Length: 522
Image 1: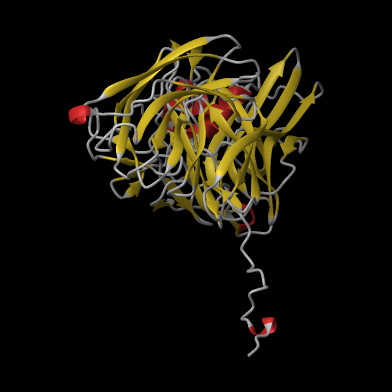
Image 2: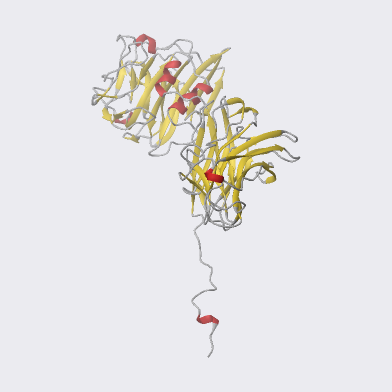
């Protein structure tokens, strides 16, 4: 009788696997508040680990770990505290959040020493560690006291138990030392005992965290640890100021495969969008909110400059339609087709304020979805027409560079002379995307600066001492999607939150508006 190896069914073949990768982006954070962001791991095999391999130093007390159940990378930090080092979820009342568990550990509600939850150790022989992901800076020689509650369970004395640990790690997060507290190896009448430890940080330690050690020599009856605490302190935990953290992460699975992720966490005060706009005192602000089933043209600035459909030099126009669904966080939008507009005419209430000022210091903004062009010329998003009888010149405009060219333009032509003073975005808008757009004109020491921001980022700027500080023509109307009923300059698309200012906005305010809209460039 004989057997041939090549008759065996492909045992020498290695099964192909899909590539390991990490997707998603980390959300923004608020100063002084607790934070958590998650990234999705895909095609991993077995347990995964994560570590930061490049970028900025994250806030004291941050936690970076893998949620093995959901296969997600978790980055979190506590609310800002001075002279403290809080342990996240010290009593497991939030389940496994904030802990990395070795073999045999399970977070459950069975027989907890304190509260409703505890970490239980069973179905594993030998020793295994459960580590808090709350890690704080430490210096060589620093002393830290810590303890936890232990319920040894029903095992015979000496067969099983647990203890508290202090773990010291290097800059790469690798453990360089452990100090163990007293081992609780008996539990007469189901009693709970403390495990205490005092540790001194060794040379080479960069961070410290608390942990528990499960011990089993015989039997397989569950034991419990709970209520971890310590006296470790740092100058401050968390972050209480605006900052951007650029980070690079490396995720590895049990096969040794790795995937790299790069991104940012922006820590900033993010208010409601309308609040941000009103903080900058606009001359006029039309949200175009969905109001009782119709688009509202009311002025939210408090100046009472309501917009309406108007007749331009080219003819009559119709109202834009209500468009359910926001362009930015918390808002609605108006749908403009080739024959719809809103505007403010000379002689109407508050119109003179839209002339801004002869100084040429002003700003205009809106939120829009990349439109469809209907004509064969340059579409206008919004414009202040220079002369009632002339369509070709404007006191200021925000529009596009040409027919079927989705490059934004902001500026003006020289009140009837055709002398253009504007900037053009260096890239086209992408079809179907939503953008926050801001045009700013400033004059300092006779130098006129025209700037264009898209999603909070400065994309074009022009400084020119030869640019004139233009007088504003009070005869021409202000319109959105204008001049109307004249297909060459029309577009079809959604717009919201049109605001005009009689002063420039700074780069910081441009970013604040875009963030509040949920459209900040990252």
